[in-house]
Length: 108
Image 1 (cartoon, rainbow, N blue to C red):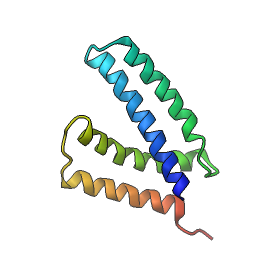
Image 2: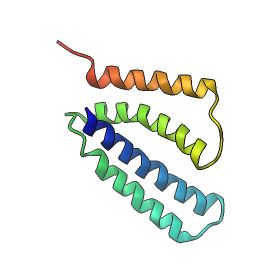
Image 3: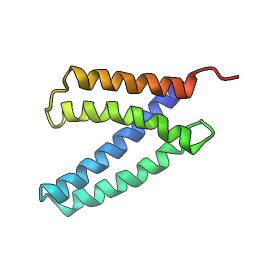
């Protein structure tokens, strides 16, 4: 379980970081090298996600979606200085509950 969480977090940071660098390049007129770096990070994200031990692609990506939402809120708070409100936190919590149910709820 611990390794899965770490892989989700590292994958999320690569995806969000890569997307953010491309955003800076295209939306804020920053260096093309930021865009290239962002593209490389996004490719790395695709590799990192395959390190999950869960057997199916769909389950990994569905669960990762909830983690991505939480990381995006934290990124916005830390990097963009946009304070999440109560409903952002409630939504993030609901997503994490969904992830836990999908990945770790006992099945027969």
